[in-house]
Length: 361
Image 1 (tube, rainbow, N blue to C red):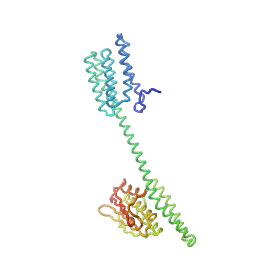
Image 2: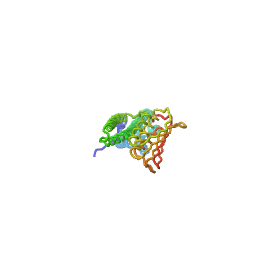
Image 3: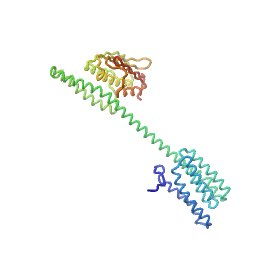
Image 4: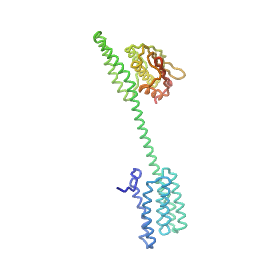
């Protein structure tokens, strides 16, 4: 099994190995002047223990990291009477603060090392170089390092949020396309099916009328292809007058009489698009499922809202279980700050209410 000293994360990388070069501050003095056997034994025991704590710190956080860093500080305090280069342990301990998720914890660790280093200099190590190192270097080395790591973590969090937003946007776009494909094509394909069935019945008795019906089927198929392309890029209907005309054509083909009560309104494009798609879905459901002979469509504006009611005298009964089309309609209406209600028995009544100034979501 391979021994792994450092976590396999992009944030850690291989830089921690490079920082070990500063151990020379502690090691070099042993080569420059004689030392007792005790001092050499202390150094031989201190270095492996430090390396163990050093690499272990990269796997820790919170209170465990605090304890690990202060043990490195303790090594510096034990070694200080025998080697002024022990100041490097205070620096390593302070730099461990870069591993905290909260920068405040890291700066507290820096302050702790400065205070303990000053105490050690006062009690155990008279050299001024030691005091200068433990007072200045932890601040000027660990401080920027903590700030740098926090900046990297913040950039990582921002990147993850951007990826999450992008993922959610893709999901929303797929849901939009699914709703639009259902709402847009359902009506047209239902009309094609009805006209094809009518043409089949007429082909023997009224071939000219059957031919006319098939020409309309051909036109509807081309229209369906155009609508598929529009749905992929973001469907926008041709407007309420067009949808009402299409609804009348589909209902007549199905043998359903259309009665309308439409107030002349100047609607924002977003509101008109939502109402057009809702009308298309409602008429498609009436043609497919209602078994109705009459359909009523009413449109009015009151109290700063646009109200649309679509009802039939079909066989619907409570409770109404919405399918994909009605669920997609509700999502689209609510996304524009509107509301949708269904009431059954006898027939089905669909009520929509939208702010007259609704904007695109």
